[in-house]
Structures are given as structure tokens and as C-alpha cells.
Length: 107
Image 1 (cartoon, one colour):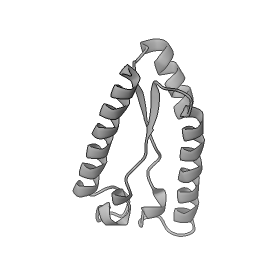
Image 2: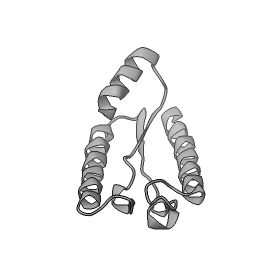
Image 3: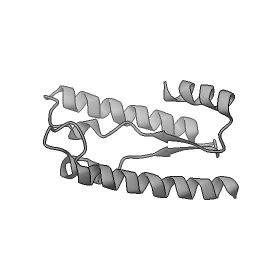
Image 4: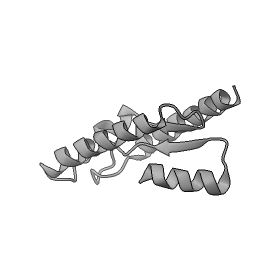
């Protein structure tokens, strides 16, 4: 789905860089009961691996993986979303990733 959406965006807007965000680490969502949490975690890893493979040879597209700190240590009390600290780490990593990817595209 992300790949199809990316194709539409690329065709319509011609961006210099398109950043995909990995599916969050669903295995860390304590609000999900087992075995659903295990299943969703496995599904997220498979989706991310597939997307990473699709983007491997595309220099104007990149995949940002969620940092490990957004797992259990960076989760909000609801057990489903990142905490303020988790979002902060995620945003910092994403901004660094974008800057590095832009520099690589400009070459």
C-alpha cells in the first residue's frame, strides 16, 4: 500500500525525496492482547522488510525505521501510543534521517 501511494505521489508531485515511515513496533503495544500483539508485531516486521526491499535501489526514496526507544520504554500509559519522550526520540531520528537522505540525494 505504501509503495502504491508513493508511486502516485511521485507521478503527481515529483518530489526530490520521499520518506516512508516504517510500521511502528506493534509487538510493544501492551494494550493489544496476546496472541494479537505477537501477530501484529510479526506483520509489522514483514511489512517493513518488504518495503525496505522495494526501496533498496531507489535513491530518491528512503525508509525511516522507528527507534527502539519507542518500544516499551517509550510507550504512553495507554500501551498503544508513544509517550512524549517516545515521540521526541522518533521526531529527532526522523529529522536526522531526512537531512542525511537529502544530502545523499543531492550527492
